[in-house]
Image (tube, rainbow, N blue to C red; front, side):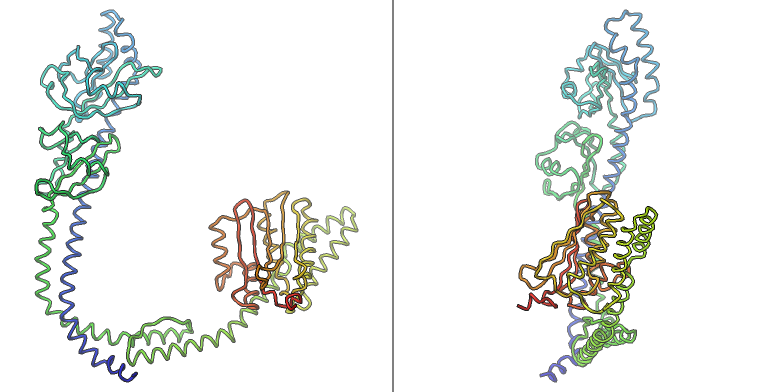
Length: 598
């Protein structure tokens, strides 16, 4: 069976199969895929470029919309304007002339360089009507405040500038009386009372020139509509002020940005729109879809030419076949080079099929056995030695020893000889505990006794800072555990958890059997600063890593537990910032526990 498989996957058979199939298939697949992908890419790129043009046009328009606010605000906030609107109706004719002269001087150059402003009109509630440009005469008796286009502004509680959609400027008596314009209206207020309005008529011709200068291809154009679908700016002046059709209105207003396709009168179109951040109006690009697909059609011709020249791919096919045959051999050579650099980690390497695959599988099996032997004999001993070394390095923190000696010195200075004796005795027991039988396990109650002495010195040094409790199930008190397995965890809670605590701190140790009785859980809990979720995640990841040279205490405890009992046991951390930190050690109960054997 194996010999038959080797024959099927032999080099000669592979060459026959590849040469007879790839030459036929590759040309067809490459041609079809390249045409579809390139056509789609060209279409998407043209849509994206057009969208950028529209966005830039809207930015330019918004600049003008925003810039026209400046003269309007200057007028609305000018004290002379407020005085005229307040007193004009009751003033004598001489005073009215003076007011008119002041207004003329103030507004003389206010829109001299703003070609997109057609006119600025001052309308008051007491009869004052004044236009700045004087380009055309205004009908003094025109009811601005009752006109249909002003009613939404007059009846609105909104403050600030409001933009009014397309309307006829029939308040002029001359050439402007039939023009279609859009206006920006700003209430003039004093003590929150509306005295009148500044009406700024916008020069739509200026915006038409901006939009017409943009190229959207043959038959494409740009126009602007308000949120109700009323056309504000359009290349065809006859459509200004009219409403767009119902078929276009719903999809156009459904989403104010982006693009969509539609069919209008049998012609497929691409509609691109973007919304003004100043007025809320929509800028719409109407582009015949034939212009979008024109480049794709040209690409089709090129694709057919490439397919016709596909016969030249026979050279490439021979190269592909050669590489396919030599690929597993190269992979095996690269793998051997890595093994030469002492990289014995097991890897999934695709050696293909046939003779090379058999060699590769045998080689991977050999590497696996070598790696296993190294892990069992060398790495295990090395990790054990490293753990023991770190254990010796952290038996008594030098800072803890120094601070304890300083405490002894202070007690001696104050003549508290009994306290000095107790401190020295406790410190001596702390130093002696790790020195004898270092490699031998101890009963859990001995470890707790050592922790009590360690805590006693801290509590004498920081009186009233924290309380310590220990709740241990009597059933596990004589269970044997590695020496100094708890001291690094408790020290971590004191040094890091309670570092900012002045009083009211707590360190609780709880030792109990798991629910199924197969293991013992040792929990060290403190009510200190805690950690964020990100910090807890990072710490647990470091504790689960194979090696971390920057974490000595907790990682050392985890390594000692897993080296002795296996990877199913170890250490984990839970915490909530500003509330608590909980470190849990999990050990097998049957290890030296007399109660577990009954």
